[in-house]
Image 1 (cartoon, rainbow, N blue to C red):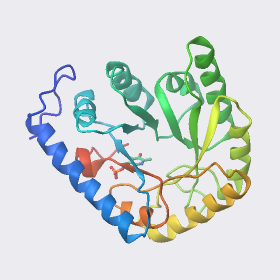
Image 2: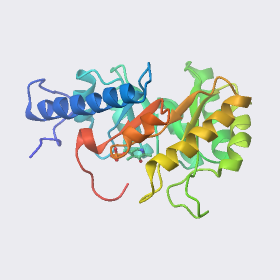
Image 3: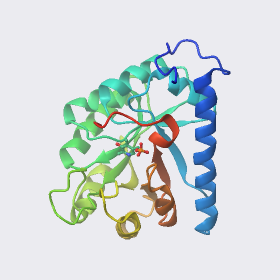
Length: 250
Ligand SMILES: *Cc1c(COP(=O)(O)O)cnc(C)c1O
């Protein structure tokens, strides 16, 4: 068993868990490199290691292994870890569904939010980040519009309808404290990831036509990173293939 419950304060670079994470991280990096070459791409995507459900000690281990970007999906968990690890040079990416009343908290630690799916959330984040900027300075929040790729409208994995992406992009662009990074999606469960990410690539291209700097495509998880790289993902969000499997919820 892994010693994932360890205190985050001290991490021995030679411990069993660090060894395990090093191996898993190397295998994922190899997969990304192979997929990048296979896609004929010059530049590979950025790897965001999704650390939800795993303790701050693991995030510290990953930072020691060269990880610079971590992803979290619940504010309570993320804010605690970010506070505990504040001295580490990490970028925290918020990737889960987000209630507007959590915007203030997220604005304190997040480099980016990948899950903007409604105008009220963009408004709340704009206000909260602007306040942080007044009080001590922080860079604008990188914002991805999350798109629902399910064909049936009641898709349960979150996201705005493709037809609402332009409106949300304009909303983000109108706020000085927010920076429009691009689009994000989760491939529908049980569907063909190639079809999903091809659709997302089309939506991203359409967005770039009106917002040329919004070049980000956040797509690809442990199961489907190769498909995501094939269709132009610039940010991968990989959890279980690096950290291990999680409880079913979340
Ligand atoms: C948990 C999560 C991931 C990571 O998924 P894995 O299958 O563990 O790689 C990526 N994106 C989102 C939005 C998530 O919630």
